[in-house]
Image (cartoon, rainbow, N blue to C red; front, side, top):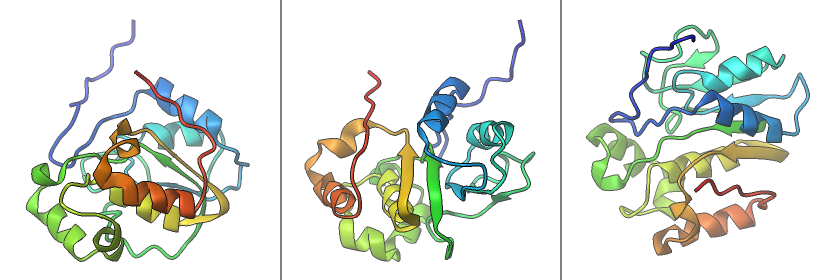
Length: 181
């Protein structure tokens, strides 16, 4: 049996690492071709990057705030996706964005959000860090682009996420939602 190094489940950045089987399932949902422009906004250890590369997708950009992760990939930008000045549009944005409640955010992440126009327009201190990843990702999609994230389901039913849901409906539509119990 091949043993792999066990990764920590989370850290101060709200990181939860995606099992390869789940990442492979998510990539299988994407309607993309080999030259599609793909973004992974919080690549973590690089499970999506590895699988995309193995499946022949070369036009992939990734962001990771934790410079100790995904060091084997050349296409990772080690900066915050939240404050990154991204001008490109993407056919697919895929990944497992960080989720962490406002009260548990590190002070530097709270500072980032305090100056972010999308956050200030649609969110408040009851919102989760996840929300800015969804909002910004929608802004970066090409027409008919796809956003495929795995995340907790509370954004679908809490009162303080109604603005996020409305934004999502106004700027696109839900094709499929999978609920993993």
